[in-house]
Image 1 (cartoon, rainbow, N blue to C red):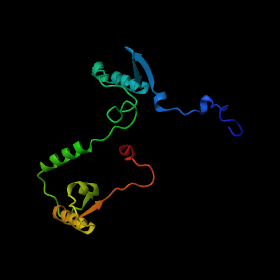
Image 2: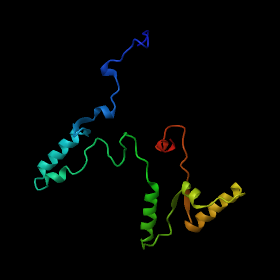
Image 3: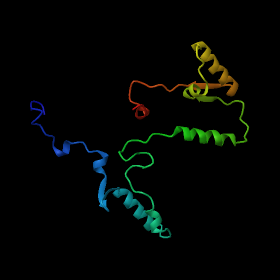
Image 4: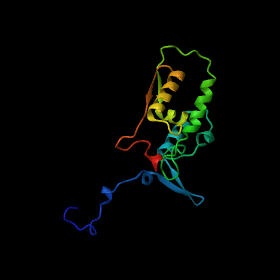
Length: 163
């Protein structure tokens, strides 16, 4: 590579990057390109043979793919999370619990939650806002720690949400 013209240089096949899409086996089924994970297929066949009391159709009832379809879209990128649905479920399910919370509990509160729970009044100072946050925390949680998970300089798991 050193000393060669960029236009004249070509990579050898063994030096080229291999993406997950290239690694996935695919075949045509009714004019559709279907990706088949051969290892997953083999594992399901072995499991079916070992458990002879199971139904063969049940073993192949789910889509075979190299990545979980519930977590990744068709382009191979991670799907956007549905935190609102999860939060709604958690809030509704915890209201049904009739347990007694011990006195020695320390709560860890997501600082981003506070930003959404408490309104910012026009003309409020930062001192007034922080005091309203502190009052809310003491009133609802007593003893607790607030965590603001900021963004560092490097790549984070939340980068896809910022696009």
